[in-house]
Amino acid sequence: NIVLTQSPATLSVTPGESVSLSCRASQSISTSIHWYQQKSNESPRLLIKYASQSISGIPSRFSGSGSGTDFTLSINRVESEDFSIYYCQQSYSSLFTFGSGTKLEIK
Amino acid sequence: QIQLVQSGPELKKPGESVKISCKASGYTFTDYAMHWVKQAPGKGLKWMGWINTYTGKPTYADDFKGRFVFSLEASASTANLQISNLKNEDTATYFCARSHYYSSFNYWGQGVMVTVSS
Image 1: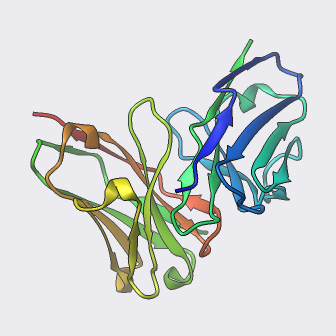
Image 2: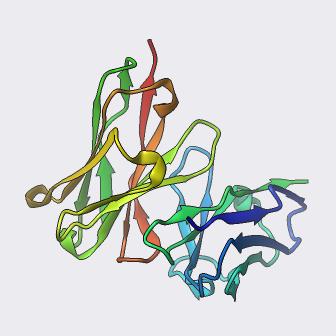
């Protein structure tokens, strides 16, 4: 199975800062990585698909990059509503997997 | 509009069974795969598997082979998850999520909390 390793586990930032969240795959997965945001007691929400493709309705401060094994979700100038948990997910193999998540918290 | 509406919360005893439903609306049910995702309290997302809504063929992640069954009521645009011989560690919120085949989850159900306690 493909293992996704997210880092850091927790990221403490001040609103207005820009951040990068990492997701590393245990083998090459081309660009078959997707990013989700999950707020407390809510269903996850798709932010970015296929590493860098934007999703309608998602603020432009969210962007993604990477290919192969290393992927990054970037948030330009974090806003208060962005403090939540972020997960990556791969669809390269028929057995999908999620990363363990990065919690973005207020510093 | 596209919606996935799941059934209500469940309280079960160890050894019992539970069946959770996910009713889709706003799109052609058989055009998209349906996935199931587990989230234990305070934990991350765990992909359980998916069902091909056109053929009915299920695929299970390794940790969900045996006691877990995905099924369809295609005429009702509904996907079901049945868990048998419930254990305390099955206590979790279970989400259904829609995807194009081999793609991202662009719509999610609201989640169903299943509590297993004696």
